[in-house]
Amino acid sequence: MSEYTITYIKNENPKEKPKSDELSFGKYFTDHMFIQDYNQERGWHNPRIVPYKPIELDPAAIVLHYGQMVFEGLKAYRTERDKIQLFRPDKNMERLNRSNDRMCIPKIDEEFAIDAIKHLVHIDQEWVPDALGTSLYIRPFIISTEPYLGVSPSATYQFMVILSPVGTYYEEGINPVKIAVENQYVRAVKGGTGEAKTAGNYASSLKAQEQVADEGYAQVLWMDGVEKKYIEEVGSMNVFFKINGEIVTPALNGSILEGVTRNSVIQLLKHWDIPVIERRITMEELYEHHQKGELQEAFGSGTAAVISPVGELAWEGTKMEINDGKTGEIAKRLYDTLTGIQYGSEKDPFNWTAKVKY
Ligand code: COI
Image (cartoon, rainbow, N blue to C red; front, side, top):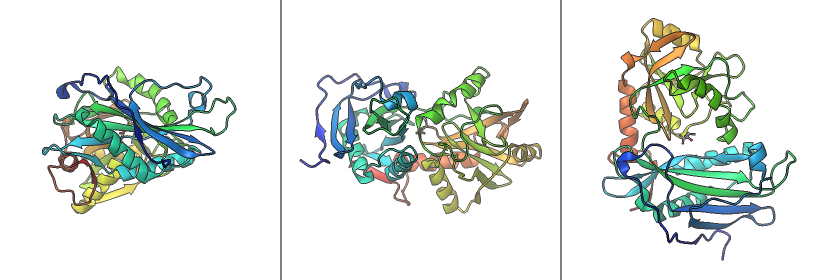
């Protein structure tokens, strides 16, 4: 048997599935999961799909102490014709390997990983929900498993994929969210791990988020880690602003996550001949545009969040209401087109979808 033959142990005790219209984000998990091991002698080996269950980990495993891990997020969608498809899984696997490189984790075979994901989703296909706006969230991740308390890269790893039927990420659904600009804490610095999808970036964002949650803010907008002046991203999405008819998004700079949805939004805007520019933008500049009535829209993009309009930005004691707190025209068009492609109701001119079930 080749190192790349996936073995399968069926779950003989399948769980009851949640109702499609009662889903929020990331609470339920399907009946199976994918696991593959790594060691220095055999490289990545023993890929298997097994019943979903807690894993056994040595308490000294490096991931538990120093957070050497990476993860990804993508989704499987059920189309009106009852097919199941993924959205740009190649982009997620490319990014997983870039994160691996940053975190000193051995690279995976991207093609094989996509096949393994398709295989797993196919097995758990009944878990792909069918209500509007729902999908099966796919969480691939790699953890360092060597029991060792010295700070050095692990000699062993596990690559896993789990699946979770989801609804919208925010309680607001697809309605505009309120975001607070963060002035005290920073998420990432240039040269740090901001560009990688790794646990520490998210752990370090919790404090800031907790502080604004009571005031009704869904998340914080991060500034750059050096001058706290340039806009970077929101914890679970990249951001876009419509200023005087032009769409502006912070340029990738090494500390911003390179979102797959961000990339898709830029491509769609270009395709529609809507001016879009990736550049540095300060909060002062954004505020000035707002004062002059030139800030027409703000929205975030992400796999979990899809396109999420921002109705209010709170910054240094001022509340900047955007587009009267309503969903803007560009955000709506992007949401409709992206979800149209994802759910198969619109043509896919960029070849972004990958079939799991025909
Ligand atoms: C995603 O959009 O898939 C993310 O990874 C964001 C998040 C839920 C951490």
